[in-house]
Length: 426
Image 1 (cartoon, rainbow, N blue to C red):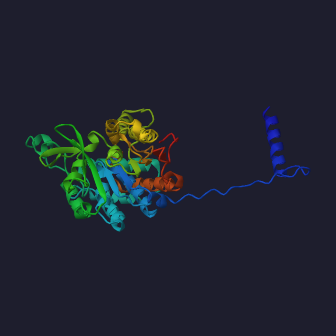
Image 2 (image 1 turned 45 degrees about the vertical axis):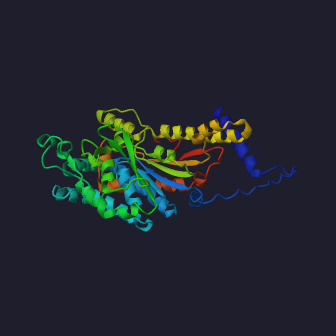
Image 3 (image 1 turned 180 degrees about the horizontal axis):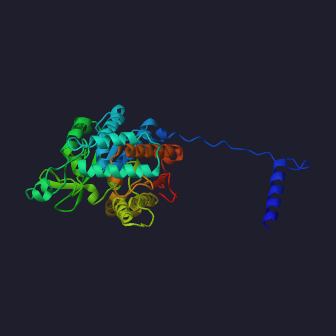
């Protein structure tokens, strides 16, 4: 039977190659030229807001820098940066610098924090790392270098980011920052003051939003440059992940990392009033999907992936459903004669009416098979470069789909795009 199928297939191929029979004239095909789509940069200009939304994820945050680099090269410059934890740090550097300086500042930050902290650095370990970088890349070597970087991050700290305290927390005065954390983040404050122009950030018109958690109430809140005067402390608070880092005091309140409650500020961006036509790039560092763990270390990694992914897709779907409902309600009321609509009813429904459109382009870092549960604090230079390159590649692929960037029709309201959608690793 298989041999017969192959013979029939070969016959069909020969017939197609020979063309139509001589006695029958082949019909003339009319090919319509498809209308060319605008470039992503041209489409981006049609939105009132272009937002870059950045999750927290420690050392994985270099992926977000690669995403921004691709946008920058394509001539797309967001006017709203929102982030949590390391996403807040990246967002502050982007919002606090002129477009022409942003990539330089990002590189300076990541090249700094990927070095071991000052007095605790091991010259021999640094020399070993530099030597290993010359070897051909492979999974086993990358896994070993990642583990070495993670151990160094725990023992030594990272330059310009955090340093270990001289005494453990249980030997410190109760209630002090030293008694409630293992590391001191004073170096990060100095780094932010060096790399971020906070005067520009608070006056340039480019918006910055960072998420934090109130330690005493457990409530989540955002600090927004549209309403708040942003200082280095706000960025430190967004990245104050306990028990590693101490809570940051702002106006008498103690704040921890926003990722303790929600690691993704997308909903805040899309739900803020007044709503505007928005192109949002949601850049996640944790994938909610993954394989079944086989070891205890796999369990720790999978638990962290699920916890910090913040159910982004579910949140995106919920926002999209609400916005479609608003759009549909507005269209419905337009079809009803005004004389049949009581003024009180119109007033009650007005806050729910909206004809704005949202386009959400979703990018998710996909962890490599050799990365383990310490991937978010393995601040090695080679891992950083790999993460950065991954973000650059994924955003470049997305830019290769101009249709992703075209605003949706008003009656549709919301669309989402993901270059990895349908792939098992997404």
